[in-house]
Length: 262
Image (cartoon, rainbow, N blue to C red):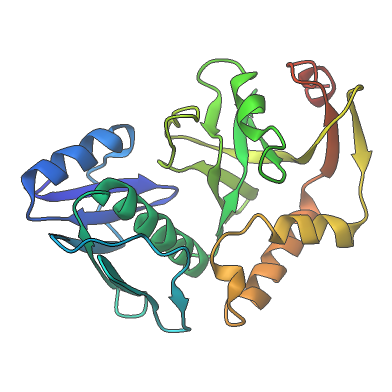
């Protein structure tokens, strides 16, 4: 690992981060420590800390050739076709701002590599990945906390990536203090489960159209663009054609595993 340069493992590839600020580099290394790698990055983000104050914008401008952030204190651009990315941001929230830009970068790289970035809690049991999805507050983090120690890939963001044997869920390094800290790993996807809080625990079969709409809602950032959306729809359809999808009605405990591990 070169001075001032980190390579962060994200799914089957890695993303590089460079900075000339040694303290910021150390903070990044600590935050992503479980995912640091010597793998050659597929793309490197050049970061620069400025004194300009500002807020992290909610969404970038999404174009077919590049993604752009242009706000006071937060300016960046990602061009996949040129394999280039830069971010200049204020120092006060530099770690949070850099992490957000990295998430957007991972969404783009995963897409162009044939996969998708996906909002879900991923838990590995018996060598298989179970994906728990739902609206904010549905219970993804609670479900992850009710899983055995060391089994959580990530309780918020995964990369779904095709392989010769089917779709695989990969851990990502993204988390916040309220979430289960992720670990590197991957597993073939066994089931996708939309969480429904209930007084009873059972699986409910769902029409394909509803399942597809719920899947699309779990793909961040890129579905806002007409350039990316058709291929994302295709990939979600491919996933649903091979992987069982249910509404999982559950209590706020771990009793749901009894019906999932049958």
